[in-house]
Image 1 (cartoon, one colour):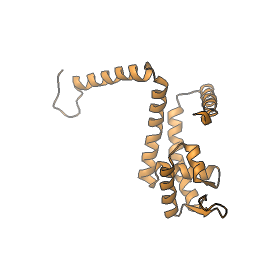
Image 2: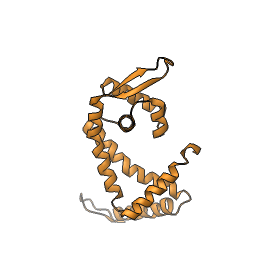
Image 3: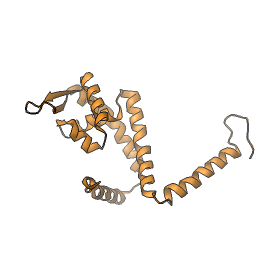
Image 4: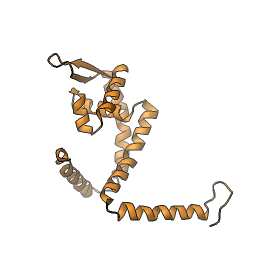
Length: 171
């Protein structure tokens, strides 16, 4: 294996590393016993991580803050437990996001008079405006990641995902 000291030049070591990575990818992700898990995880990571990085950098909105904003903007007022149930995120992560958004005056909390342990979360106008700013970041990435599918394939994917999600309570 030959190494080159010149910056920017591809070396045999680099080529071998790329070849090795492709071989590992094939054996683990494509042909491994957990290929479905690996392919879904890899796709989700490549889909979500750039979205959340851009939102954090451009709008100071983290993953869980976006989850809270998205749930409240799409559905309306709800308790934090519902957001945890929908997103699959831990209570402590959603709680931190809720507290951050309250401090930033993006959402407000109304304590349940019958059960003071429970609070209804509501989106403020400023929270809706923030959500409307960050949403295109996610929509654009979704469009990029799914553009390889034609209309029939996209409909098939939607059907498969819907079917899989219909059993989420059994997980």
